[in-house]
Image (cartoon, helix red, strand yellow):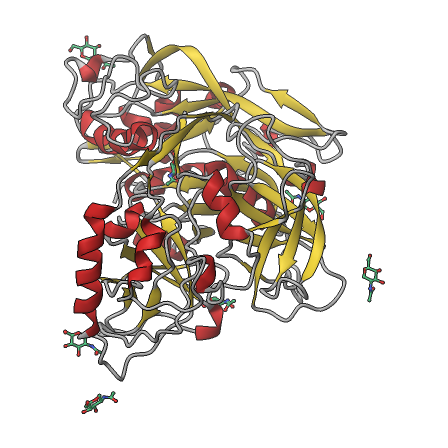
Length: 589
Ligand SMILES: *[C@@H]1O[C@H](CO)[C@@H](O)[C@H](O)[C@H]1NC(C)=O
Ligand SMILES: *[C@@H]1O[C@H](CO)[C@@H](O)[C@H](O)[C@H]1NC(C)=O
Ligand SMILES: *[C@@H]1O[C@H](CO)[C@@H](O)[C@H](O)[C@H]1NC(C)=O
Ligand SMILES: *[C@@H]1O[C@H](CO)[C@@H](O)[C@H](O)[C@H]1NC(C)=O
Ligand SMILES: *[C@@H]1O[C@H](CO)[C@@H](O)[C@H](O)[C@H]1NC(C)=O
Ligand SMILES: *[C@@H]1O[C@H](CO)[C@@H](O)[C@H](O)[C@H]1NC(C)=O
Ligand SMILES: *[C@@H]1O[C@H](CO)[C@@H](O)[C@H](O)[C@H]1NC(C)=O
């Protein structure tokens, strides 16, 4: 189970988008203030917008493989009065600060992120890459408040710089929320004509786009929620550019979960251009446009197409640099030729580890994927992105290791080993899945010196969910994935391997010190505050662990039903070298 951030959706979504796509900077203030056309921070007209205040911050639960969303929804109306006074004071106060001259407004997209943060993404026209040292990037709000913009990351593909601003408290009760003005200094003269378009919320936004040879794939939060609620492709269109009447539109050919595909326009589109998803009018509802922070770029046709690697691997990581070396060296040795690492915002030494591995000849590409709780969408993205260079794609986590018990007869590993678990090129098998085995802490109290394959040797008896290697040309047009496997085109078959043939060792419950960090983050994905019980039945919850971040008694001996040293012996034989402590593994540094 995962938990996704959700805000009060329907009223806002309708409202913020009926105005269609006049663009990030251009949704007029009159949408915001029904009766007024211009906006002044210190006028009392502001009060009218406070009439409907909505407190949000609730959560959609959806179970991962089945993608059944269960929405828990609550909204609280708050009396506006208590806020009005401070609003006025702030607004007047702030006028004293609007005296700067050297400050420059920077065109940017923005979206409200979980945790009351605004992700500000500099528009491609600005060419701000990377941000300049010493500049004081700041978000400015209509009431005169401002918040410091902290540099977040340079987004992949478009190379846009992104920043985070904290949303001032008063706007947390606003509905809709105004998009702040982004500027490169601590003060900024806000003109009365400034427009404050509605800030897109993370539960209803186009967040990423990638092109294939003949279509474009959009990753979109919002329009499809939950199993069985995928609206048909005919309900959608892609819109290229901001001018709602004249913008080019193309038909959607697929709509599943958060992934939408549209045919290319048959006219040349001058890039960079924003790409939106339009929800076509039905009898009941008028056409509305999903706000967007994504840009369209046609697929570049490579002069010399890269030779496809046969076997690639994709994994989504967060702060796992410590384990990456063992995982990559092991899987590269048995046949993975290229690794595509989707990093969901690590702040550990991932970049260094990747750089060292590349220096040693491993082919490792890092893709920054900052979008929260979008693992399925990330995997679908990887299927398209990897399709240029990979025939087969293995989807495994970095605490999962694929092996075949039959390999114990081999004194040396070979790069044909994983290949031997897959069908021939002519076969119509499009995907092979392997059951996983869950290992416990195996008496370890810290990260084992020789790596996880050496340290963890005791596991639960029962076989767990599978993980898969998929033939990218067999992946369904919709790019549907349930993390553990993909949907396949009709002509292809799916095969689940016997555990004697191949199995995944999943080092899931590690030494407490290691597990704690992972658990904290995982749990935060399900229950927000991990000490608060709000989804106690989550299938992913660790059995018997409860909600406290303290080491449960007997942790080191838990999840230990069967001693299983098969992969330990195999990797020691293949990667172990004698040294003064007995032996050391090739990945030990
Ligand atoms: C800003 O204005 C002050 C005077 O008001 C002036 O001294 C200064 O040079 C100006 N800075 C820029 C960057 O224009
Ligand atoms: C940013 O703020 C600091 C501290 O107020 C100031 O010293 C610095 O000059 C500012 N940078 C620019 C580019 O204005
Ligand atoms: C982004 O940066 C990379 C690396 O510097 C470069 O190869 C690529 O062409 C850039 N892409 C765009 C859209 O500017
Ligand atoms: C573009 O596609 C439309 C609809 O399919 C068609 O009517 C039009 O003739 C096409 N234009 C060009 C320049 O091919
Ligand atoms: C980050 O990736 C892990 C998979 O390793 C996943 O469990 C988690 O939900 C992801 N987090 C976000 C914010 O996408
Ligand atoms: C863990 O330690 C206990 C007690 O010393 C021992 O009986 C058990 O075999 C050990 N388990 C493993 C997996 O090493
Ligand atoms: C990969 O490319 C092939 C050939 O162009 C195509 O048939 C297939 O659908 C693509 N797969 C994905 C996942 O994009």
